[in-house]
Length: 202
Image (tube, rainbow, N blue to C red):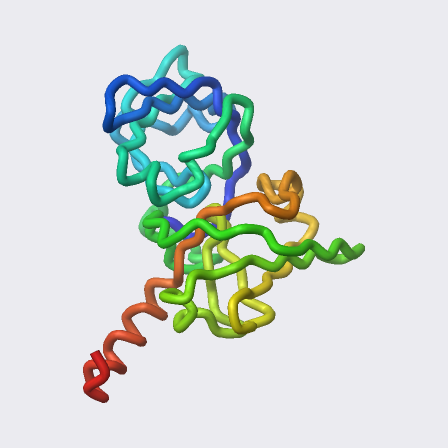
């Protein structure tokens, strides 16, 4: 489990497909190596992945399954890409974002960017089947970043990125048409399901 408070970015060092169902992702994570171990869960662009190997206390390897690739932006990842990194939540830590599981629901595209001095506003599309979970002032994780929904429109939504978030994440590289991983707030899913159970709308 994560909070969506990104610690920084890491760089894709290499990508190797070693059979039809799995791909090995090698990340240069020199800034995070001191407290990482094989088997540990890490959020990379919002996807919960396990460390399978550590090389020279700098490079960390992860296995991407066919399912992970099909549901995330890792399908189009390239060497040199900057990836948002968050280590798993420790009991007793402050929960500064919201509960993020690292289970990506869909891939969305950047529709529009509006850069201002105090913030950058970004619009994303959203699949129809997830539309019911989008609500103004609700939480959402985009590429692993905990954000608050601002505009709740028919087929799109917006968020505002403050300068600190731009500096500390890969949002400073986003352009129109770029794809991002989206995870809907788990609380919104449970509330919607329970409401349907009580009302009989399945």
